Image 1 (cartoon, rainbow, N blue to C red):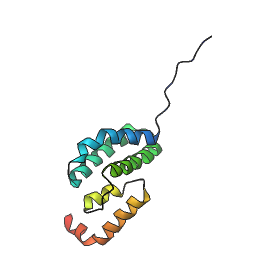
Image 2: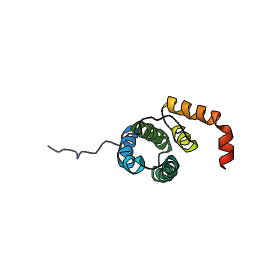
Image 3: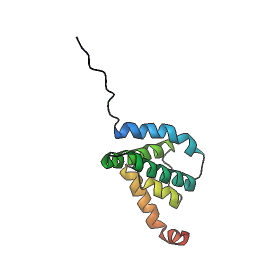
Image 4: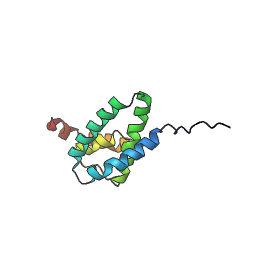
Length: 113
């Protein structure tokens, strides 16, 4: 009798997101939102280069952001950088909160850049 070798199941977007949160939460936990945004932008670009399946990437990254926000205790948005992160979450309520904050603070945003 012959057995086929076990092939590991391909990773799901949800599993990748959970793994990334496990790896990234610690380094991001105690830094301010502007630094978090910069780090997440770098990670976004790196993952985009590394993940060949664009649809997989487009599903996994927002799930990662959603779970990361949950680990940050889903705080009320208080800055442009934080709103930018929330805007990339898979969770609609995060995106809605980001959009509302950005609308409410449109004048501040134009003064930043």
